Image (cartoon, rainbow, N blue to C red; front, side, top):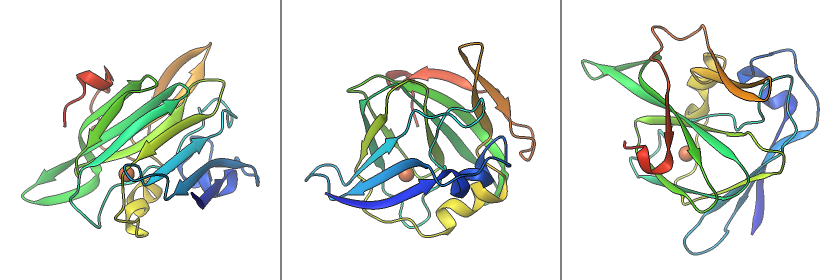
Amino acid sequence: MLLKSTRTLSEMSPVLLDKNVSGSSPVYWVFSNVSKKWENMTVISPRSFGEEFPKTFGHYHTSSNSIERYKLLCGQGILLMQKRKFVDDDWSPENIERICFVELMPGDEIEISVEWGHSWSNIGTEPLITLDDWKDGHPPQDYSQIEKLGGMGYFLVNRNENATFIPNKNYKNLPTPEWLSASEFHN
Ligand SMILES: [Fe+2]
C-alpha cells in the first residue's frame, strides 16, 4: 500500500463553507494499491473546520464511465451525492437533478454511476476509513467544477450536535436533499 495523496486544510479552503479557514493540517489521506479488490483507501480526520464536518474535496468522474464501488470500513460517514442534470445533452454544473445524503454504516457498500458527483463527510469522533475500486485516475477536471462552484450543493455542518445542511448559493434551483441509507440509494 502506498500513500497517494494528502489534502491539507489550505488545499480544501476553496470548497469549505468558511473559505477563510487555512492551515497545514491534513484533512484526509488517500492510499493506493490496497488489495486485489480495492484500489484506494481514504482516511478522513475527525478534526472539524469551523462548524463544518471534515470531508473530501468532492469530484465527478470524467475519464471513464465505469461504476465506482465504495465500502465504509470504519467510522461514521455520510456520502453527499449530486446528480448532473442534462438539458439537450448539455450539462451546466450549477444545475443538479437530485441530491442525496447517504448514511453508511461500517460494512455498507454503495455503487456510484458516472452521473453522480460525490464527497464524504466524517460525522463521527474517530477517523472515517473508506475503500473504493476506482482505478481510472483523476484528471484535474474531475475536481474543477466543484472547485469553481465553491463546493458541492450543500455544506454539512454540526449545529447543536445535529448534522444540518446549508445550501451552496452558487447552485441554481437546488433540489431538496434526500436522506437515505445505503440500501435505499439507487442510481
Ligand atoms: Fe469517485
